[in-house]
Amino acid sequence: MKSHLISLVAAAVLAVAPFATAHAAPPAEVQDFLGHAAASADAKLAAAGVNLAGQPVKVRATVGSDGRLSGLSIAESTGSRDTDAAVEAALKRLAVGPVPAQVAGRKVMLTLGQAPIVQAKAR
Image (tube, rainbow, N blue to C red):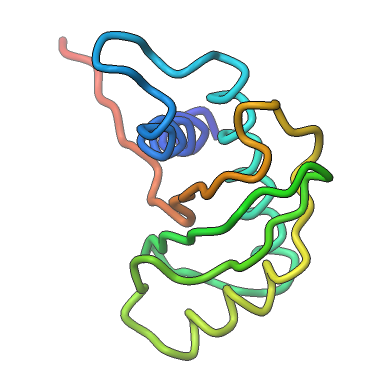
């Protein structure tokens, strides 16, 4: 679970590039929102029975001030048209909660279904 969360946060950090300046990291509020949005999307996919089978998919959408995603589209395919269509259908009415002012009305990209990062300790 921890490693899956780490991969979600990493994906979210990559999605906030438009918010970053050359030397500043995106605000923590934006990073938290994008991490929560990716986790909400993954949970909705699981509830809808969409199994990405370790094939990540990137989706692009506009975040409304009400927390709903609109104009959702597949930015990077899973490689399966059926799975991509199921992802779009499952996330069509996704609401991701309170939206930071910096994100409202902007396009974001979320990476979903990433395989957990495996970590090993050196002996």
